Length: 518
Image (cartoon, rainbow, N blue to C red; front, side):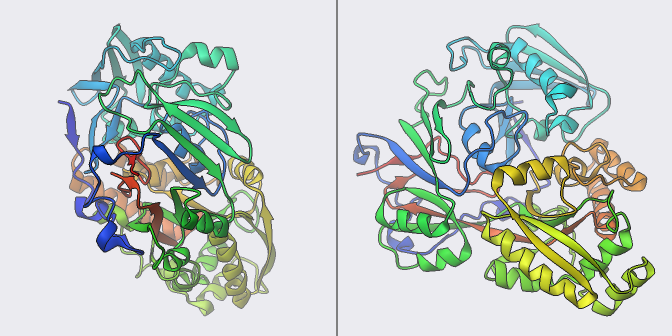
């Protein structure tokens, strides 16, 4: 029972990773990977990130800039393979009884990076920490269905759920649903500045605004993994700096935008890999604040938003207009083109504002991260588009750390951002928008919507579950606590000497098998 197939994803959609850009015909890092004999003696990869981590505590910090780092350090009970099938990671096998009891047999001999063996007690502690109110974990709502956790023996742990849960195994693959060591938490109070996991890489140092260094786990329990001796992450907020660095070989890999991908088309010794992301861009409203407590106002702003313009201008056309579930999730995502909220009907938008008591529009502030060009550009386009219905929006740009605080504490009336749909519709719908969703930072609450997504979570039959989430998406778009904009393609620029690297929609930077050639 090591492998469970989740049929809800179209494998062909997710295994994109098609190559575009410089020299891909002759230097494809996948099809022409060099032999091990050609490996460079020092196996070090240098990666440029656009942001530094917002913290390293996996149970507390959802920022992508953090996940990129700590996903190499920590591990969970299950993970995904490249075909989006749930497989064991720290759990080598599991059994399910009556759809509510999951018994996991752990891999024996796994050690934390402090040289202590990981056992079932660590699994129990980790999930109790996630569920503890004081932890304020962003993934708590994934696991509130857990009724009891029992340590059977050192290598066996049993979870009893309150009710059947179609999302449980998938949620266990989340980058934050990982196993941590109790003594490390107790010694440091949290894990924001330290990181001791069981993964293939060991945390060495974090120099703020500069770099994060991870070393190879010499005692890793999986044979021949990792190939790399060290990962060096460098913070380069300006894309022009990352572009220059990848050209010169100062770095080996970096994520880039569609516009920069075009600039690298003829670059020597650089490949550009593209894949359809599971992300979408959004406009989030604090639904407790006037005028955004009125669904008519939110719907009016949605109808005044021309998403095709955002796709063409911000993403150079390399994006798909999206709802709350990104199109890369196949049939789980509804076709949003016929939704009224997407109609770009200016006159109807004005009528809705009039009905809401704002016939002349209103003034507001759009908050965005100063370090992401796509967010700034989106804010500027919305500022212009919303003027057509009398909405005068000032743009406030903030640094990344402040942005994270604003998001988590709902300090902004309007916030521009990006979310990931995850690997199950429950994340896109329940986690972000259920009244008690861990990432529902919008103060959004609707009884009918809550009932739908609660039903979707416990419905096992896929066709029935899909119909439930279709209804939930339509209702959410109508109520518009967020305006869902577009799902972009992602691009990774990679030097020719990086071998065995392949990005996927669900995992854009897996480095376990990567090695560097001469």
